[in-house]
Structure formats: C-alpha cells, structure tokens
Length: 198
Image (cartoon, rainbow, N blue to C red; front, side, top):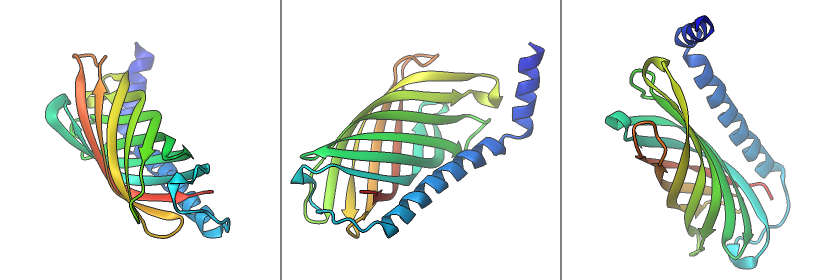
C-alpha cells in the first residue's frame, strides 16, 4: 500500500512530465514523416484505385467529448495508413487527450482496423472501423483503468501536393463496452496532415 501511495504522490507532484513526453513523441513522428516526404523522390500515382501499396503517416489536433462527467478534452493524435488495394487499407492510431482536463481526468486511446477511401479529384472521403484499448485516468489520479474500445468513423482529406494531404475532418464515435460504470460512448474530432512515405 505504501508503494502505491508513494507512486501516486510522485505522479501528482509532476503530472506534466508524461504529457510533454507524449507530445514530444508525436511531434517527432510527424517531423520525421515530413522530412521523409521532402527527401523521397519515388514516383507515385495520385489515384488510390491503382491497386498499388502506399504507406503514409500523420498527426492531428483532437477534440474529445468524454461521456464521463461530460468533459471536453483536447489533445493530439498520430496515425499510420497502409493502402493495400482499390481503396481498402489499414489504419493504426494513437490519441493522447491530456489538455483541458478537470481533476486530472484524461484519456489515451490506441486502435487499429480497416479503412476504405474513394477519390474525387483532389478530395478523398473515407470511412474506418477500429478496435483497440483505452487508458483512463480517474479523478485526482486515484485509479487507472484499461478498457476495450470499438470505434467507427470517417472523414475527408484534400490532396495538397503529391505527398501531402490535409486531413480536413476526422470524426470518430467510440464505444467502451466494459467501462467500470457501464458502457460509455465518446466522440473524437480532429484535423491535421497526412504525409506519404512511399
């Protein structure tokens, strides 16, 4: 019990250190993707219906409606997309919602699943279905929980250059069916950039 108490005291004393580590990691990943896009010279056909494998990564700023306490959190996310064939692909994402919190309640989500997109000139609408887990920090850091998370969502991207797309809107509905106080539904929205790696 003393070990848990000492650990909680350390976390309460320095709650910002974890936030800055995660934000730094997200910024580093995004910077690396942008640098790779600037130096790569491979020819890529813009159309996603060519059936060629494409890998891209990016990041977004995120807003999050948390049903627990009707809180509105702010954070960042990073994602990786692998387009496989005819608009079908795989997406993996991490979302860190650490700002605008009340009583130290914050959330991290990690999920992966299928993504389907279509091209209309420079616009690319997409839909996705993801599954993963979320970490939840209860008020005043008295407890932490990890919960199954099932997500459905979609969005719209705009092709700015051959390698860079603006993720103009990304919306995700999340179901946490095993949350401690019963099933919980949350909504995430975001906007940012996606950069082609190859």
